[in-house]
Image (cartoon, rainbow, N blue to C red; front, side, top):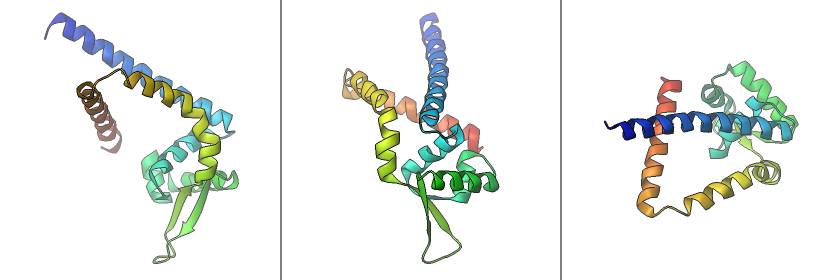
Length: 149
């Protein structure tokens, strides 16, 4: 490995660490704007990909089911989530994001950042975008391996 390769690898690792820190700060700022806590914000983000049970949320967020139930209660009172009973198994309850509320209050907090990312990505050709997407996929896999074991 060349010195330049080692330097670039180190720089990318440092920048990735700062990016994670910026993401955490962004979540905290968004949560504050919505008058919720950061854990609640992580829950809302987890629900963007679709409904989940309290148990699934607890595992995803790494918190107890009791804490998850309390969080869901808070978010439901605030109008960010709803609970729906499974018609096949009345014991199973799905939690879902209230889409209208998310579009009106959450999306605008992140829209400028997403627009900026898209503007930056427009400067790359398809091959470069594949490399970036592949790298980000491997970063996600690394996170999942560390967190989920």
